[in-house]
Image (cartoon, rainbow, N blue to C red; front, side):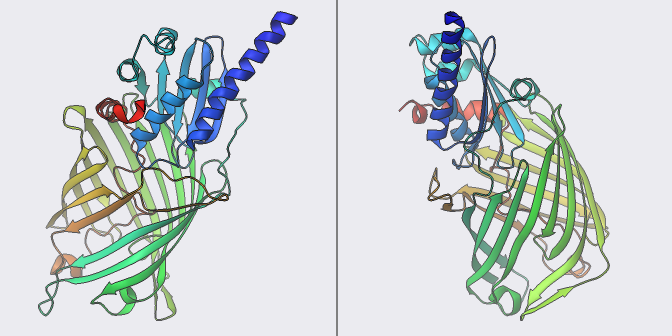
Length: 404
């Protein structure tokens, strides 16, 4: 009996250490479980700007929090509580690191990374959640830039605004977003010069096991669309291949001059896509077939290169006999990490994101060809990116940041 009590106390201490280290780091929705072989833990990272930086600090914190030898399994969740990455370190690796026989860089090199999280999540099925994020909002201020060369009397039409947004987790997989656009400067009249709503939406995500996820979003989206969207995707365990489908039913919605105009007839848009990650060049290649918002059909190809937290992409599309193309990028804004203050986290956006289209005049614009929209704030290919080979590459490359 005495031996059993001592073992239970050891397990409790082990849990407390790992939980405490991750909570001190700013991680939320932490779950831990003791197994016959070691420790399993899941956490959600809403504190760090960079996905790989959050992973690096979390791995080190968990290793430092282990008080006895054993394997370590970690499931990394995204901001909506959906699993993105599994980290596995066997007993030998953990022991060698704890005894100083292995550096953190070597631990990063030898640990196993995968998109398949089912094994770790099964071990955590009955565990309790600590450091809950539910009903604790983030106030995030996004920069917004409108830039277009479509007129002969002005070199560019432009408008600059700030777009603060309340982003609040509600329950598992659910998040409420409410954004307002505050104009700062520009040479435009009408909507772009007025205070107006941005993205106002409720999103519910589901993990369907075996790397399948489903999300349903309803609300006011970008590009004056109001309605609902369903989005499903699947990834291979190594994260190199991804398949997805998305369908939306929306109406036109415009708020200007204190009047809200909404069309009655909804429009269906849909797309299917395939994506491959090429680790040698840290590059994503995506091909998709789509029915756009106003009923035109087309295809689109894009390439995005990851330079650490910066991404630069180009795209080309063909629809109804017309060709368009352009580029996009996402660059990090100052501030690597933000903690909560009295239950709320107040911060600037993690990234500045911008996309420029080549065609902005003629029949392509007159017929509203190739129109699409996003359902969230600040969406880009850097934010919440948990591709395993991307994570490992930049963990090793920037390892000195985590050893201090």
